[in-house]
Image (cartoon, rainbow, N blue to C red):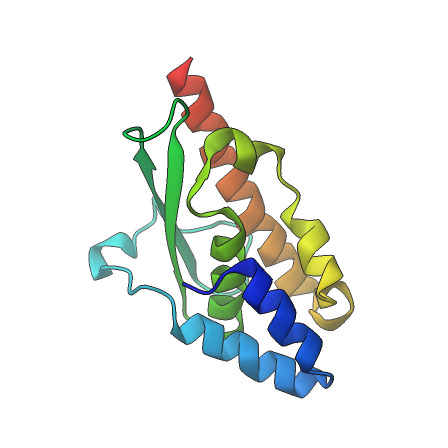
Length: 143
């Protein structure tokens, strides 16, 4: 999986947004495949114009706090790329780190606020809220 630092570095090298969009689509192609049975209503993210599914696995083995690992998929190429960036930011972190994070700030830093349609922006916020809710639920279950 590509790290967020690699994504930042590559964005810095690409000056044109057409090139950045192509890169985002390429990132989406690197997502780990999601099993077909995970494409269900329980995993579907509400509030996205495209079809989006997110799953989480909780790892309690190597940390005092649970670590969350996510998989994601979408029927839209750009959205799959946004998922890849979001997972680079959040997957593999503790539930506390995720609950305290601000992924929107990173997407803004990369320039997405000006380059996503309002529908895609709303969908991105819905994906972020879903991951943060998963983190909060995991924390509540651990208390």
